[in-house]
Length: 549
Image (cartoon, rainbow, N blue to C red; front, side):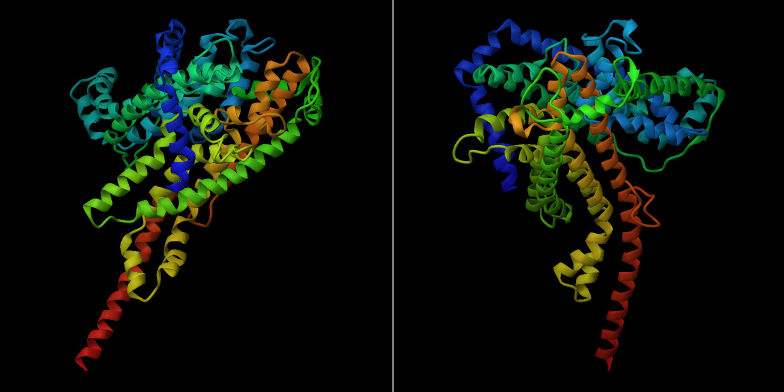
């Protein structure tokens, strides 16, 4: 909690304090500010609408129906969300730009291109959130409506839609939050300015007061979106009893639309990125990858892509250690059953505070670091980068750990304590074995997020400590086909690296590791609980026998 206070509450508080200063508040009266607000909200709303419209049929096809190849399609649909936003932006730029497969649409550098990239990035959020609830609905209500003569459209409108509406609203509010903070996508695609890109531009011009005023406006928008998202997320209870049914003729439109979306919106940008990274001077070649050891054409000084990759790996490793140092003990503390009302309130406040970075833009975090921690008393230099990345990664590490730890039956610990185990042995023999999968996922999320983090890093790195996402953005802004080719090749490497990290963390840890972490832990805890209870009863019986003797 102390680390979160120093590296999150202090920078954000400093940003807010500067944002309410008189010179910063003058920004609120500028027409330019409200044009940026309107652009940000308009694109976020359009990205949310596109994700929901495309995601609802996808949720039905990938979670409710059953057909050959469904698991592969679901895996492909989940790929965009693990990719760094910089990679997403470069992929769409390669698809829509000159010589791209979709160049005939003439969308390069437009708002439509940014909105399409937002839909690409958030499609899996809607599919997963809505699909898990839809798959758990009792099918008898829809069957009864059909028996009474209702057609497919009326059944969906009167029975299914009201049941999944909370999940749709929760997914939409979360997607809106992500779209309104899509800094990496906007910066790499270009052609449009939002609040976050303007904050970065003003900071580069050393106009900190205007940047602080814009950050305050952005903070209010994100906070409101987070409140709405939290409210709907609580109302959308997860259904665990999942039923799938065989594909019917009436399901063909949803399955066909989902297949088209996955092919044209998800696979096409990724395939275009990989293919165009292998083209140099209008011929197939590995030259773009060979040039990664150079600083690029028309530019002297600075780091090479290989050096930037090393910087990213080093900063991400430190950030992962910090995120786990904060997240693991906090997750264990928050997962313990509270015995008093005061303890429950304390746990709720601690969890809300730890999850707060999820609802604050990484641009806000980076700007706060710049104005609060680069000067006295801390005077952080390049070491500020891993701390900023760790703050962004802590909420995701907690989300991976908490469900697994809360699935452990507390009576297991009580039984072990009754049998003479101390706190350290209980942790080693009960908690850690059951939480191993969650720990791996927490580490994987922290490492992948830190590797691809762009918003905060773009404020804190310079010159020799450039990270790979920041260098990719700079290569895109430099003229010359060679620099563009290097950006494509570097994006492929970054995307593959983050995907590999998540793949390794999802590998089965044992013969029963195919189950999700929480379900696996719950089943293991149930088995261990029965065994521990039998041992406790046995010890009580022996004690009673001795007493009778």
